[in-house]
Image (cartoon, rainbow, N blue to C red; front, side, top):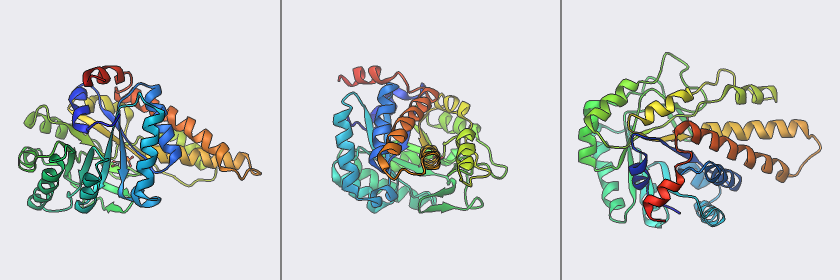
Length: 316
Ligand code: 13P
């Protein structure tokens, strides 16, 4: 069942965070739904602009609708990750997405507000939720690359004004994480004092943490042992997920870790089965491993076991 992020945040706020996971293909979609249903977690399915271009945006929609039918217990939002204005409008007008992110964080404060407000007006007219971003994360994500010297943390004093004037439903805050597998390469760390300060200024307002993959060292070691070259990859400490959730962070974005699971499974499988040239056996291993990974993240986020309560609250 597709619901808005705003609805999901109502039940999660100050209690647990929803995992926001990116998908690109059928295997990820199946693993994602299975992992969430197995761990009884509501979730947010994210689609990036790159994913929409990978096969065809209609292919993603078809896969998600099919998965919704295969897993009728699932409760989830369909969310555009890091949209520009044009892509937000395309998603809003499609009638399929329940949530979009407008990322105008690279613009000036005033321009960010103006762009976000335009998207909010159009989205709210048809019941779609809007996430905006204030401050800028470093790192690389698909076609978005932000140098560490350009990245800057969210200013808590600006957050309340931004939310008030833009009308957004949730706010992605830059608190020291970065996108990709090479986080904290310099002296960066997580700035919980910023989340705390923002929560004090906008109590009850849902916050979002991007760049939250933990880059499990076991995955990195196995990838490297199977021919990969990911030396120095590092991520967020998973013990920080729940404390963040208790400070109003309702959505925690995890994409890179899923790619690492994919890379480890495929590298090891092809190394160990040099004669195999069928994509289904390895695809099956990946779907099972990805489902396990998703369930394990939901335990850490506190969203595992919340599905029945959310369904009951929704009256479904
Ligand atoms: P990671 O690269 O840490 O998985 O972050 C993903 C993300 O924030 C998507 O918007």
